[in-house]
Image (cartoon, rainbow, N blue to C red; front, side):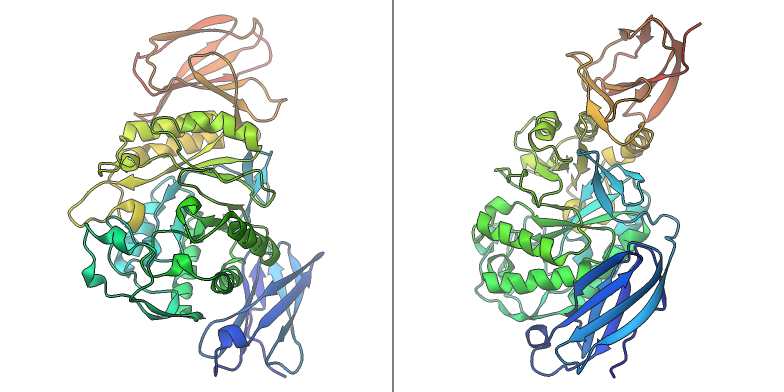
Length: 511
């Protein structure tokens, strides 16, 4: 009987990888198959495996419970099933499991720990050289980000005309020496000059991406994987339905078992002219059928919002649809779709020529606080010009902007929310006010004044409840205790923008 290679013990929400040796002649990507069934602690999971090159076949599994597990593998090249036994130990420190939707509009890890998304976009950081990847990971290590959006496929766009470190298929790309900053749009979506075998994957490309996902996991960062996108000169955005299906099945088999994975079907789906809504619904059905762990799923637009009421969509992934207003739309989107609202693109802090990439750090931070106080989850991006044209939004590296330095305070404030998550509260027409999503908590108000500059503010909630007031300077990153107040009271403010107040019940009754 064929011997499987696997670990005798893995942690809860870790990855059990079972490997088999098999044929490497012909085209194993389409001519062979391998599947696994894993059982233990009340769950049975069936999962598809994949060919990893060099005669190696792999099936991966993420256990959701502790205890004794068994598995049974079948494959096209086996005479009979291959079985094994392993143990699942408790989750290690920092391992809270996959992120799930919680409380309709919010998120929590599977162990119940609340998750407050502070995301960034860095499209092809994982396809840079080793030095830049290490630099990006070090930048992330010292940031407040706990989610990053990036592509599985190479990207062709402004400031990103070079070749990636690897390609997803066997073959050769077009001659990129013909590209200039003036003619790059002429090549978008074209297939001329490329020679790919869309039935033969390049396993090394995907192994490297998996290593990047695991490095993010060590940092406690969710990997929001953009599976398809339109920024393409290699022909990957206009494959046939059959070729797309093979790609999707391979990606799902390789990445589904990692607990920190989210699925983004596409970035700017509505400018992928070779695809229709029927195509996107088809890909969504594949995810639902082939991801046994039910990772978070969404799709991102350029101009026209996708119908986020679709049952397969777990959360809204939004790009701003107005030159000025972004965070302001959070309330409406929450009520329309009754799902978490993640503002993955609220424009980028930077100084490039495009309107989506030249807002100030102050405006980026304002959009973050406003979105959060409206019960949403904002996302960051940065597009500052530099001599090497290495922009964080595409390449990673180092951050040059001012806003990321200030996200840590917001993340800390969010993590101290009673219960899980905030919701907008109509305290007054001239401020943005948030209260805990669930009723039943003691009085708690997070009030943001945005670009308004009040020099004082008066309040009167009731005559009995003692309320502690904190003055938050979101730009300077300070929190100042303004004492405990009862009845009608006045808070002195510095008369500058980007200020917030946190008002919390201090005790039971004023004396």
